[in-house]
Image (cartoon, rainbow over all chains, first blue to last red; front, side, top):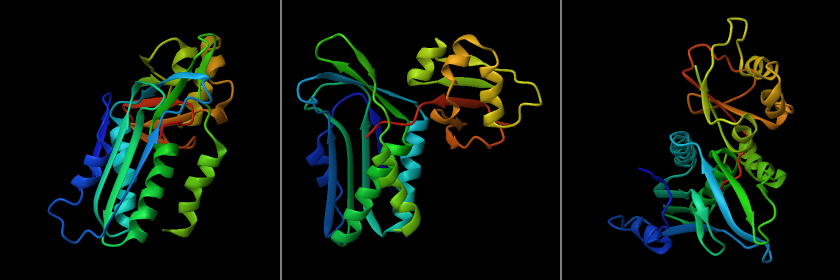
Amino acid sequence: MATIRVQREDFEAGAEAERLTRGRAGVGAVVSFVGYCRDEGGRLAALELEHYPGMAEAEMTRVAEEAERRWPLLGLTAIHRYGRILPGERIVLVAVAAAHRGEAFAAAEMLMDYLKTRAPFWKRAVRADGVAEGWVEARRDDDRAAARWESDGG
Amino acid sequence: MKAVYFAWVRERIGRAEEELNPPPSVMTVADLVRWLSERGGVYAYAFEKPAAIRAALDRVHAPPEAKIAGAKEVAFFPPMTGG
């Protein structure tokens, strides 16, 4: 049921969220999250996103299945871009449709927490001064956010 | 088995993929990391902190103790930073 896409090109966030309601009169709530590339106070010129083709889609599908197992979802779309992304551009979308807002909020949050720590994507920062660039380091906060879902079972 | 490398692991090793033929004594992901490190040079550099490396077997995340027998593709990469 989930729609999973890994692509270089941009996506239309509003249209993707809206699509989840089409032909599904039982939908009472759609929660969508869009992650953007920020400029880090002007220091960042771009992000280069590397991914593991094949595993990226597979892992996003496993994460989506985990969300569908925990909550009675009526629709789920997850899109992650790769390649060069400029400040202000979209990187990732998760959109979840459900009968009620509670499960839609929770599922969207779990999806993002798991995508950040499990989906095989790596960001490299290209700096505006052109001097240094480097791989973005994983954040401990992201691990902690993902770990919350291990213990409470949703 | 085919090995694929990503992000700074790929950059340190200097290639994106290669064929590996580990001896039968190399049974787990952790054994494989040790075996590759013992090659020295760029491999020792890439795997200098084994705790900083993540692995996947046939495109599924695999912990250090996972058995590599039967796997066609092993991947090594840093912790993920997508999203």
